[in-house]
Length: 315
Ligand SMILES: [Zn+2]
Image 1 (tube, rainbow, N blue to C red):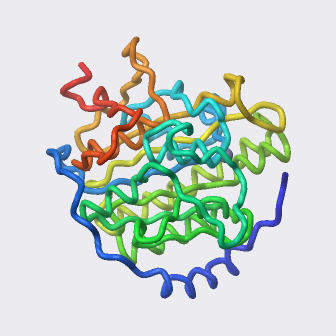
Image 2 (cartoon, rainbow, N blue to C red; image 1 turned 120 degrees about the vertical axis):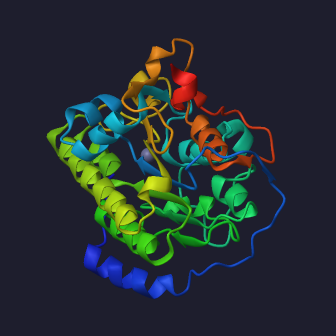
Image 3 (cartoon, rainbow, N blue to C red; image 1 turned 30 degrees about the horizontal axis):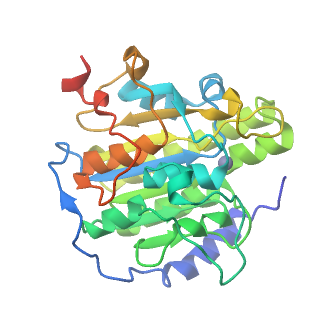
């Protein structure tokens, strides 16, 4: 359903106020174990474009993301959870386990004062335990489920149901310039909104993909300006696709998602489907980012690091 989106100007004002209120809280714990990190990678940026179906990404005017494919490794056949809806799938993306384990099987806002967090630690939690600064900029209010207190150095989750991609990108850029968080998750909501309103594959949704691509470009530019792009692994993905005006289980058009990763040591222009037995799942996002940052997850996970992205392993 289409809902009202806050104007970027009003949102920027809100962020300016909130930024002072969202400084780091609890000091990092030191319990997670360390493994050797991938050389040259010390930061991670994950951008999830809500509802981005892979074939539409390829068809849209999206030069920034298409260039990331040239610069990195990718598959247009990654797979999200069998629920294929926003909150359970993002929770799997950021915990490395299936919904039956993390327990977030709802896709709505919980009542005030009754917030429930995933039963498995998020990327934010394990990264903070290793001393990384962490940040999330989400475009939908239901992401409060992923903002467990003490796990995020900086967090913005709107009180409105949804805000604009531009407002999200402006906040991410502001925080990159101000704090340069070492683990940053950005959620762009409007491609999904366009799908529910006008249809998956509609001209309106293709235009939304083009706009999301410009937001990704803006965020990358902020990393470049801050001098940290060359040490950042960048992963572009989605939580589900869709067809008609909706998405959900038992539909391949909802299950398949793009998975594009680039950074130091990662193979360039490398199609991961060259590995016949490799099926990238959304849980692998958590596993791969942990692997690249040298973080050993404290609990067993379903996801596996996609080591085929590293040149030494891929050829
Ligand atoms: Zn979604």
